[in-house]
Amino acid sequence: MTKGTIVALTGGVGGAKLAAGLARQIPASRLKLIVNTGDDFEHLGLQISPDIDTLVYTLANLVSQENGWGRADETWNFMQALGELGGETWFRLGDADLAMHIERTQRLMAGEPLSQVTAALARKLGVASAILPMTDQWVRTRVATDEGTLDFQDYFVRKACKPTVTAIRFEGADGAQPSAGVIQALEDPDLQAIIICPSNPYLSIDPLLSITDLRQRIATAAVPVIAVSPIIAGAAVKGPTAKIMKELGIAQCSLEIAQHYQGLIDGIVLDHADRHLAEQLAIPALVTNTLMRCEQDRERLAAECIAFAEQLHCRVKADT
Amino acid sequence: MTKGTIVALTGGVGGAKLAAGLARQIPASRLKLIVNTGDDFEHLGLQISPDIDTLVYTLANLVSQENGWGRADETWNFMQALGELGGETWFRLGDADLAMHIERTQRLMAGEPLSQVTAALARKLGVASAILPMTDQWVRTRVATDEGTLDFQDYFVRKACKPTVTAIRFEGADGAQPSAGVIQALEDPDLQAIIICPSNPYLSIDPLLSITDLRQRIATAAVPVIAVSPIIAGAAVKGPTAKIMKELGIAQCSLEIAQHYQGLIDGIVLDHADRHLAEQLAIPALVTNTLMRCEQDRERLAAECIAFAEQLHCRVKADT
Image (cartoon, rainbow over all chains, first blue to last red; front, side, top):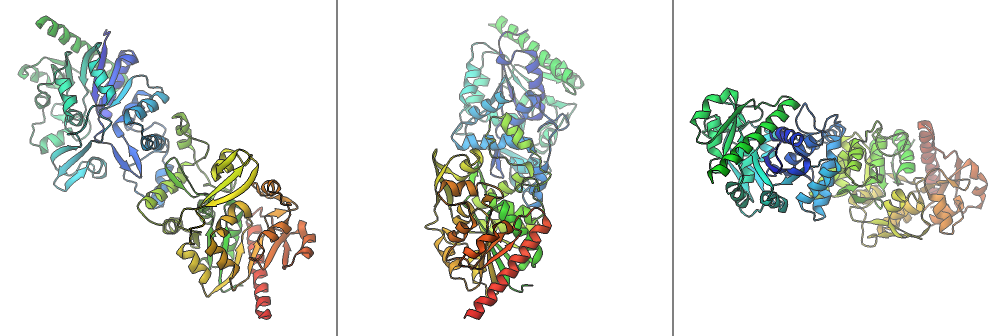
């Protein structure tokens, strides 16, 4: 059992599941989650941070188990009324969920940085682990497709990932710095491991890695960095990962995930279905069941990730 | 039965009841409601127009009969969640009602004038009568009290009308013009009567009359102008009218209402309880039941107001 802190890099739904498992395995004060904000957008005049909210709701045990995002026992009367008024209803905001967006927007407009707003709101909902936006600055994921360049939510929600992706860009990343909490988490002398959650590498993790300083800190971290592959037997558990890999001309294989994170990770976690790939890798692999169907799956995978990183830690130490 | 158009000046709940009665008595295209916007405010980043919304919901048959404002069958999950996040909950916004504020705010921010936004949203909810904000410009009711000068909603909702009122001001009124629809309604050659609804004269009707051009147009209208007194036997049906009159050193009496509207009105509608006051007035009075407890009351009072104005019309014509 680890005594140090664990940093996890995560996007939304898939990453949040592993994050929830980690939160059950180690004390809250020792878990720090660096979250993608490239999906953030302004909609209906509100500042919406989908991945942050998914993390907050998941760790607060408020998330809809059915959707993996949004709140459980949600009502949709706002959306219904907005539709009757001719408003935009393609991005569904639940009644209780709206409170998060309105309160966040208020605080951002008053000049609070996103990291401070997120910390305050997460605390109010009883989340004790640190949920850290990757940056307090403006970074936006843009998806170049056969239908033109789309804002992330246009591509992801409005067009349901149907357009063919030709490139993904992160506007604003060039000038962006990690938020202070992110730097602190990565500089923590008690840091023991960095885990890249099984989020979409291209849409959810690359925004973090597009911030040069953040990428550099992970590449040069003195602790083991491991990634959990989101690909199982050539398919993604959820979302467009496999579809995007195909469109970008990348084989839909965990080897490509390892390749994508090359220079950053010291080990990768593969599903049993991909056990044959382990020997083709230049880095250690943990082969286990990576599909998280229930709470037990999450906790087990989280524990295995921590233990795997710990072994790597010993190895690293032995090497030096 | 009137063939011309009727203009009614109204604030929120009390005025909306008579407006709803009028809407049942004459075809929609012949009813034009000029609505107080001095109560409008920005809250939670949203542009809220309480009196306009009360009119829209009432005429759309969506209003909460219990409250007289807001929507029937409303849910409050947003408010509940906002409270959990530490947000401001003193001004209660229902889940479906929120759609109105968010859509309005969006459109205003995009540069649409309030009158256009109001017309579009009212039409979407099936309201056929014209709901006309008194002005598209910024006018705000400020209440000077023993606790200092308060924004209207601070006084009215947050402090529940408890502070002692020393004066009421309408910021921005000096430079404000009536909206184009208001001018059109008052210049309409088919205009037959102007009815001042039994709203609070000091808080809900004075904002309209504080716009010089609007007051002037009513004072010089070629048609009868009548007011329905909101005071019955020295008390107000609802809200702080009587309390404010007392605090401002005005007798809580319909004679004072007539006095307040002197130079503007040609007739006043009094409740049976105040029949003895009729003979002390210099203008004609209609004595009837002015308390609107049900739909029948509203329709009857509306019909009586129209008929009363019509009689005055004949009189005016006979005079000239």
